[in-house]
Length: 268
Image 1 (cartoon, rainbow, N blue to C red):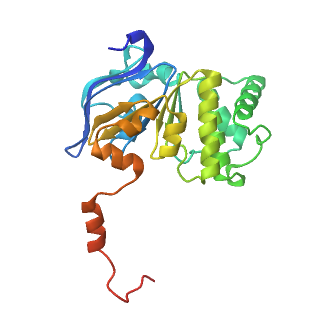
Image 2 (image 1 turned 90 degrees about the vertical axis):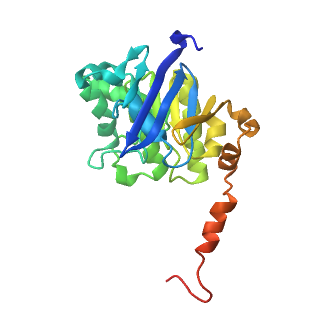
Image 3 (image 1 turned 45 degrees about the vertical axis):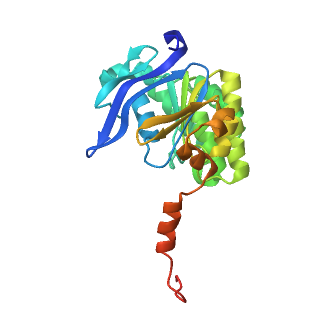
């Protein structure tokens, strides 16, 4: 068993169901301090649900979630504030406020947590933008930025409060391979320079192999693989092998063949 002092997040027998369908089933999982843990798995397997339990946007039907040995899943909203301050989140798509400048987007979480001094706001904003290679973009609007630039600004906002834990929800989705690689490099850089514990949810196997210290694969609400990235190809499970290599089953291919277009018919 992992030494509790080395664990930042712990899931203990967590079950969560929606409309009678279990998405997480009696899940036990430790997220170790200082590591980048990547969560992979097919759509609907519970990856984002897991993230939402860490931030307590969702609460388990049974079991507990701990942050730094404190059971946070049962806390009231006001009691969660100091714990959420220790977390940063990069939302899928970035989720920048369209009506705010880059600087105002970064000021927002700082001001929400009581930082009001203009000089401190400006210095923190410049520091985090420099870390992601976007210093100088303070007065730009989100509509002036490319998809990759938006992700980098959103990442700067996520680290503005100097979090201990950084959560990434599909950080490379919607980006071309070059921009995705830049985001992967940023994840590695932040891990190296800021010593942040990270949890990354992704379908991107290239990104997984590049940024992960540890890979967890979920399927039907349970963990089916737990390995360093260089051990993925040695996991003795057919479903895991097919997922990491992007191979459909014979049954899935047969379904596709059964739905083929009749001869001479075109999609318009």
